[in-house]
Image (cartoon, rainbow, N blue to C red; front, side, top):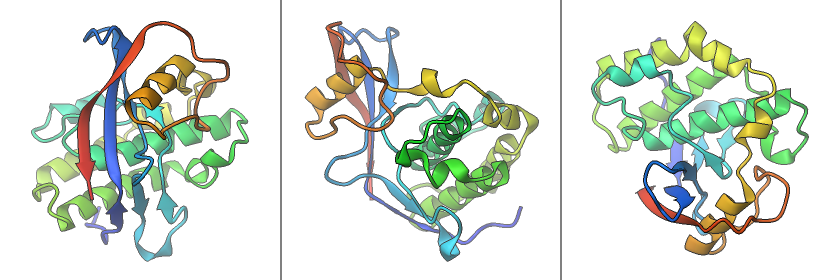
Length: 208
């Protein structure tokens, strides 16, 4: 695939670890939009879903097949802003597919599978252009091949995944306590926050 024209990132990536008592290994990673400077990726050339802004979601780079992550530079956090955008496309797609009519999923959730890996390619090109990551043609080729693979396609076409991808109320409440203003969001599961002693700690941050 030829190298795409870069787009533009703005905002901040905030990734938190949420779990009971803050014990490592007993929680999940949570992407939290910065209430003052939310992460947004603007695609080049006025393409479909021109501006993509992820909502709060669980993330581990899981939309990138594990086979890609064995390459140098492909850990889930190596290209964190691009991975957050790509992960959100999968969440939005799953919820649109399952009939969730929330406006948060409109646009991003209407893209095709081909669009999903083109967006990731554009996002990586943008990180290179903005000197957030070094140019690495081998890594880029490996990522592109992985996210366009049959494994990725099966993930994309999953039905019934939306409910399990909703952020639990107690995790959202923990994020709100740590980052005031992150608040309630469309991608949160229904129901009041549970009193489970859940805590949230920022473990990664990238700004533009």
